[in-house]
Image (cartoon, rainbow, N blue to C red; front, side):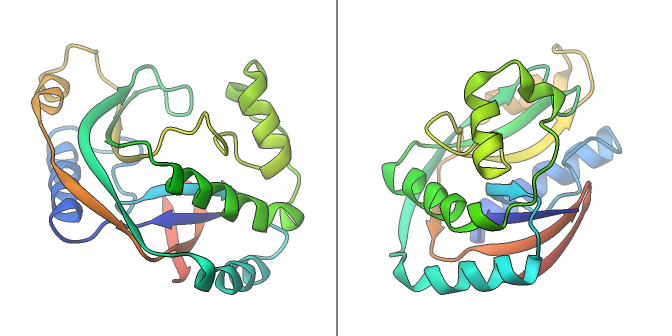
Length: 194
């Protein structure tokens, strides 16, 4: 079971992501990430107590000023080690405030992370391994690629759905004004609170 901190899109961006998830589910059932709620993961780790983690995050939230980030490109994590598929995502334009927010969250949870074994897909990457050892999440820091995942397709790279996705030219703003905390068990996501 994991504890995750998400940014959740709203409005047209949320609807666009849900539309793609529906299309993937209809054409290619049971693909990884497809059943997950639309979100951008700031941190996903094991914690000693989810309640303590949530209270800790609620205490820092008033110090975070709302801002917006641009979501205007598609991307694919080809041969994603975490899923064995090609992960379709919407790229969030890099923004120093977003990176600062991620590290603020990671640092606030650092002392209550429950140590677990480093995942195999992280062991050979020193940057990700160091992040995992410090924060229980391999993507905390400047190497993080902010994104909103659609699904990870276990198909050939030339599949028509991948080509269709790559032709999409999104243009959205993501409002960063609220964090949500979730209990995550593989594909099961239970909202703890916002």
